[in-house]
Image 1 (tube, rainbow, N blue to C red):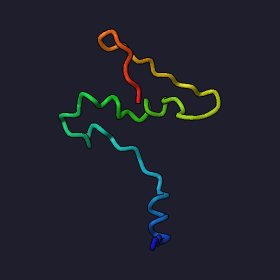
Image 2 (image 1 turned 135 degrees about the vertical axis):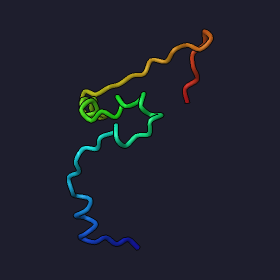
Image 3 (image 1 turned 180 degrees about the vertical axis):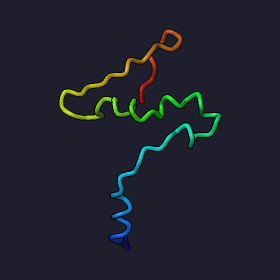
Image 4 (image 1 turned 60 degrees about the vertical axis):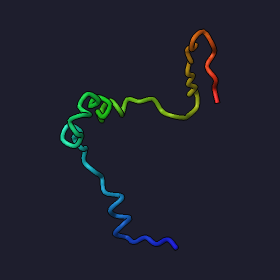
Length: 69
């Protein structure tokens, strides 16, 4: 059985303020802070949509084509 309350819905709909990753991430992830940049993340290309076609070029390994699942 699944139940939900108005309180749960309101909690989900609250607009959250940006979190500062510099304050939240452990120090050993500091070299990766640039990937948590909110403004840079907003610049990402759309994942799907008309005219969207991504290709991944695979490199040869030891002169052989890689095996693709």
